[in-house]
Length: 111
Image 1 (cartoon, rainbow, N blue to C red):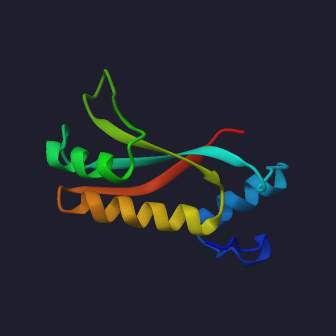
Image 2: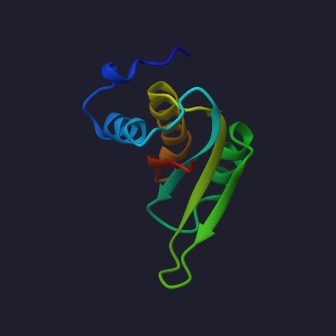
């Protein structure tokens, strides 16, 4: 996948986050672990949902909030951060999870 130049990032949530990272001196030339959060309408999700996500994204873990009992699946992808990586990964995770009441619309990276 080719990386978009920072001035080509769309004016959407993901583009705005990438611009904020750029403005803070983020190094877009190196690999990072990017966390993608998969939410589900009901927790725990169908075990088949977890199986399908792990088949394609083996570095995934479940996290459950002790207070609410709700959880998320966090998928870790090590790659060079780009707009295409973010939107393509969120789209694919949503495709895998949607038939089980799940979606992916958030991500984060530590630097």
